[in-house]
Length: 295
Image 1 (cartoon, rainbow, N blue to C red):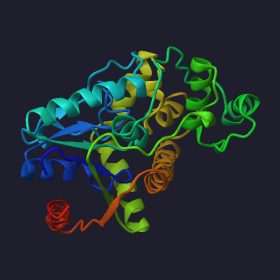
Image 2 (image 1 turned 45 degrees about the horizontal axis):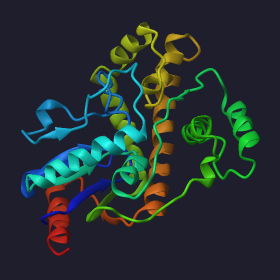
Image 3 (image 1 turned 120 degrees about the horizontal axis):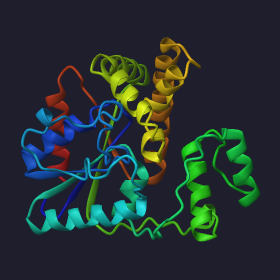
Image 4 (image 1 turned 30 degrees about the horizontal axis):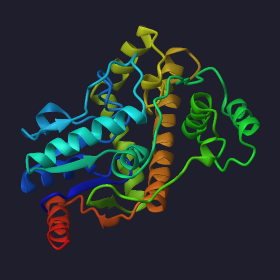
């Protein structure tokens, strides 16, 4: 396993964090965050950020490195993550990337070129339809779906920073590191049930209070408005939705996000998928360890 990088991907709620810690313990690894929302301080419950008591003395990198009113781009992440990877490898440890942001994984490990972006609008007051019209005016042949708000915004910001359309950006499948991609999966109904229950647990653990603190701060940065969980509850605080409606919207958007994560990982990277045994998670860990040791 020397000089290898392990990458753990999969939909939200499938057990990526738990697996990363188990593998790090057994393989003398260190964990690097690859979730775009977990780099920010104070965004803990909605982003399902690993808790201190869960870390089990395993070093965790690129968590809580920015304030919520600071801008942090994929360009920044690429540099920071590669620095961490090289540092960990130099110390003969195994870097383990874990998180739900596929673009961060590709930026770190593949020969992707990014520019330092000074424009980073979140277009919080503009509807999906209006945003899509903006994008179509710039790039009539875009393949981005109008309801994929995050990618539409990414394409607009890319254009305003570089003067080029995102669809013309050079893509590459050239890996710069020796990486093994591990994917966790499960039956769709099981996953959706886990997502629904996880949202309920987040609420029990203080999601409403965390969201209210952000709401009262009047900060509406990209960091705050990107994660699922805050903006939905903001609608409740604004009086536009009941609490029950806001909670159901969080669950619905989380399920849709999980579906998009599956699609992205299957289309973008070469993943070895493992069905998770939630009743005996250790058996899943052992199965993955056998695979890693044989590869």
